[in-house]
Each structure stands twice: as C-alpha cells, then as structure tokens.
Image 1 (cartoon, rainbow, N blue to C red):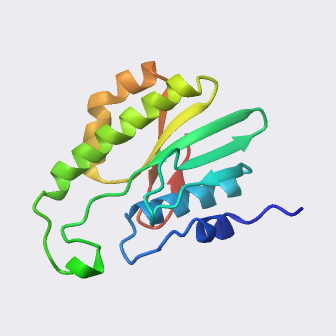
Image 2 (image 1 turned 180 degrees about the vertical axis):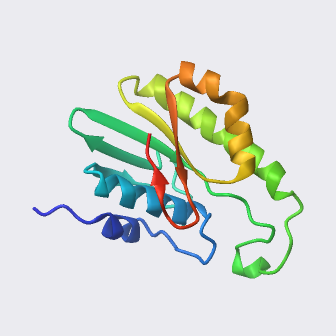
Image 3 (image 1 turned 30 degrees about the vertical axis):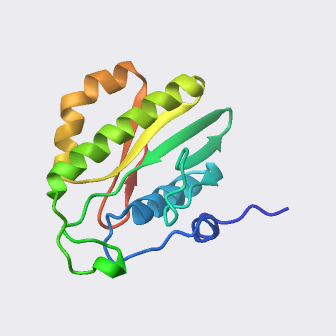
Length: 159
C-alpha cells in the first residue's frame, strides 16, 4: 500500500490553512512537510480544526520515534468567523507565554509516557517564543526536549 504524502495527511486531518502563516495548522503542515522531505514516516497528525487531543505529530525514522507538540502564535483578533474582526482581550505576547507553557508541559508528559521517543516542540519563529526558549533552554535540554522553529516562508529547522 503506498504511503500518503504529507499534504494528504494534513488534508485528512482537517487542517484549515489560513492566510496567517503562524497558525497552528500552518505550523503543523510545515513541520509535517519538512519531516516527510527528510525521510521521516508520518504515523499520525492531530486534527487542529477540531482541537483533537493528544500528540500533534508522531513520526518515525529508522529506529526512532518523535512526538511533536505544535503551537501557533496568537493573533490580535479572533479567528472564529462569528467573532471576526473582534480583538482578543489577552495580548498576543501574554497568550504566547501560556501556549509555550502548555507546549512544555505536553512535551514533559510525553517524555514520561514514552521515554524512548524524542519529545519535540514546534513553534513559529517569533521573538517572544525565542525569549521564552532562552529562559528555559537549559531545563529543556536536561529533560531531553527539543525544539524546531518554523519560519514565515515555511522553512523548518528540525532538531
């Protein structure tokens, strides 16, 4: 049976690609595409449109499995069409701190649940996330949690 392409997997997961490059769906699609191009076999991709719970991306290369927690960067306005144009009450920088903390917790839980897997966090490359990473890099390294960065042009730095 032929393996589906990363684009097919993202489409099947229901990812809605929006005009903002830094949405969770777009970051996830860029990471899946980069992994597939690097020879990784994509085992699962969570549906960001339905906020599916669990590991966002599971991929395998040779004898290693990676679980990847994906976060986007918050927008100033709501993405929900019912609230389109309405500004969010929480500043994007503040919300990004919450999302970063959620990603770190998810990566730590994955390390405990699947200790043989690589635990990775994928983030769009924003100064706020870079600052948070610089404050936690030592602890993340000690916990064997890796980061990959997604650029606005879709380029991905894999760990």
